[in-house]
Image (cartoon, rainbow, N blue to C red; front, side):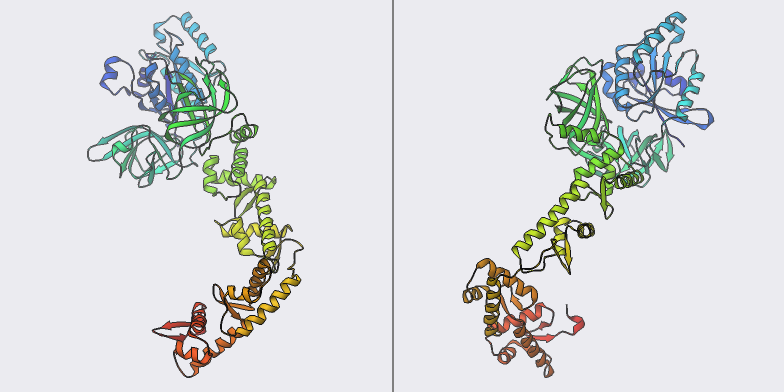
Length: 635
């Protein structure tokens, strides 16, 4: 079933509440003060039954200029507006402000309803209709259907219902494929039930028993019960008026202005990059660093405007800007917002959020403005720019979908098109821009080159170490990146090593001398493992070359390190190991003293050898002796 939200709009006392009652039979003025004064103060709700089994929710909003904040709370999520103009008064100041707000919020469909038609003569009504048509020219209401009605006599009400039914039937589908979100517009406690909140579900769906998150407090709560106009539901979805009974939260923690959403799907931010426009009717301009009131969903705060492409924004102009909020707002990219002047409090414009993860941007910078233009573009442009923004750090597809405001299926289709066009490449399913691939390739080559310069005797850098430099957070992506760089010839593989094309180990005469003399000295020491300091003193030479040749000999296995800084020759180590294993032909356990005596070395060197055997998983200490581990037990 299609769920559609119909909102009323128009000047105070133009008959919006009476019209709602005539359509639905429901008086949306619940408060005693509203009924006494005859004006709407809080937003009201009613269900409209239409032909062919269609239903819609009507939100009745206040029209008084001092209640615009309440009007904005109700305007969140409207699909179709009943734009009310009283025939006896005509188009009024709040008519214009409401029209500006609806346009800025992206409402696309509406019906112009001339109420109180029974109070005027036909020629006066005709004049009011003509004037209203002139006022709405250039807006979404230009060319919209219109009708004159009387909520008192009932004239035109049935015809209006038919118009509404047509609008409902052809209303744009809701985004059920996006994560659940519901701005809270009422919050109260019911004895025996606990905390109840109401709002319009603007995106996605929610089911009874599901855990959702309360923003901005970031509280996890469970949905205990759901209702739509007093009827219990197992689930609610975008386009429905929802009353949710919440478990695990106090009513004070989820007040008006909070948002219920799928966990982790909103960004709590104090700065956003935006596109902002002023209306033609705005009585004030906005200068750089001006402070304004900002309304997003049911949230409200004061923000400082930082214009990025000019110093002053005039009526009817649009600018790239950054908003710094006095308190964090829970947002998604492409969210719409309304801007009101700080004092006097009048609506002057609004816009869309382009980057809710914003950092401070440079003003009057062409590259900054081009990036924001891409983020304000079609889905493919947004995805390509967000991929470029991620740079060399892999971004999860889930986060990319959130930031691009796309469903998983939409994102996959767009990534496929971008990949086919050569604008991105995917590794392990994760997209990288061409610039990022080039940077990663350059990093891999530079890393390998630097290692080769430092270790000219080795066959190259370990592939595992290169992968760690490419993508430490995801081994699978790093492996595919390295494979790509090898395939394109930027690097070459040699066993478990990677090197630049044409590279080969290079031994200088100094290296050859050091290698020969080091091995002679180490072999002369037998099992009395010299330290590196002793070795360097015994075989003097170029310090850098010494370090390189020791690393090479360790890599080839010619030197076996018993500790971090002491070593024996491979032949000596093998003799010690054979000697140690041979001792178990006559015993089940070997003491340190027995091995020291057999090896003919001091306790210090015997201890080093046996500790090395333990470290390699050849033996194991049991009490004060060692046992030999079976092959399957050895690491």
